[in-house]
Amino acid sequence: MNKQKPKPKGSIIAALDVGSSKIACFICRIVDENGSFEVLGVGNRPSQGVKSGVIVDLDLAEQSIRHAVHAAEKMAAAELKGYPLREVISNVSGVHIRSEGHSVDVQINGQEVTDNDILRALAHAQEQGGGEEYELIHTIPTFFSVDGQSSIRDPRGMVAEKLNVDAHLVFGEQGALRNLATSIERSHLDVTACCMSAYASGLATLVEDEIDLGCTVIDIGAGLTSFAVFHAGYMIHCDAVPVGGKHVTNDIARVLVTSASDAERLKILYGSAIASHTDESDMIDVPVLGENERSEPNLVPRALLIGIIQPRFEEVFEIIRQKLTDTGLGKIIGRRVVITGGASQTAGLRDLAQHVLDKQVRLGRPIRMAGLPDAVSGPAFSTAAGLLTYASEHTGEIPSEILSRVRPESFVERAKLWLRENW
Image (cartoon, rainbow, N blue to C red; front, side, top):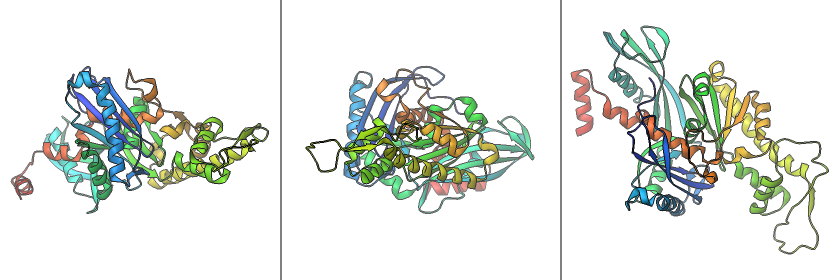
């Protein structure tokens, strides 16, 4: 089942990336039938009230969201014609995300497979897994079989007795999702859909061959590292590790006894995830915490700084490697990895990932959006850019959209649907 037809030309869509270090809002217009975007406005503000991808202070998060959205609206004012933004698609991140695979059979009884047959299977899949405390975010068809014949890419139009659909269901903890929705709705915005961060980043950074042949996207943010596995055109698994670039900064601040802002500056200017032979002789000046005036520099070898950065990132990649092994997807994951997100720009990180994961690794940035300002076109904005692709081409994976489109095939199913809608 291929991605759906993009939204109509001229449609305006908005994406909101709520992260631990920044809030980014993109407003775009679809300019052609292929779903290409024209950037109308961007807003990017420091994040408050968000920790490891989860809202921890509603008031502070609301303020940050409001400022980012207002900046994007101001830039897009001429196109919005004075009307405020009303609808956004938001990212979802956090270790509360659950990824499950379910297989469903539906009877076709010698007829041609239709869109509705696939929707029926997906609707049945949505009744499985999760739990009372979880809410369904994605329902993604991943593999099809017709009368036992597997490896079917698109079963529509095929005559069959039985259709089997493997679906990838992604759940989020209800409390975390509701807090995110509340912080956005307080800014007078409706959340039309949510998308897992690494999934959005993959839609923004991967080329078609990577999505088809197998690739893992690792989105390294400030408070969280999330990853998603793609194969045969779909996302088939996702997960997260509660460690990101901010944890590296905190390690530096604690070990070198300096402020968090100075630690961040040292990480950017002199940091690396891979040691070199000159690190012992290269000296860096580390401002001492609480000392505003210094008579002489506080010099330490660069090797000390790298000795703090490298183990933390090694830990992240080793956890991801183990999680990928535990999925049992090793044979179809492929040898390709794309790292993206703000912290992915750390010097030497690509080489470290290649060494720990034993895969081919490249740095990913948004590739499907022309006209992005340079300030928001780097790896840190992959999620925001990918949310627009999801909003344009993948809304058929939204659970509520599936339920609204499916047509019951029997009197009993129609009665159940009527009772669910009216009681």
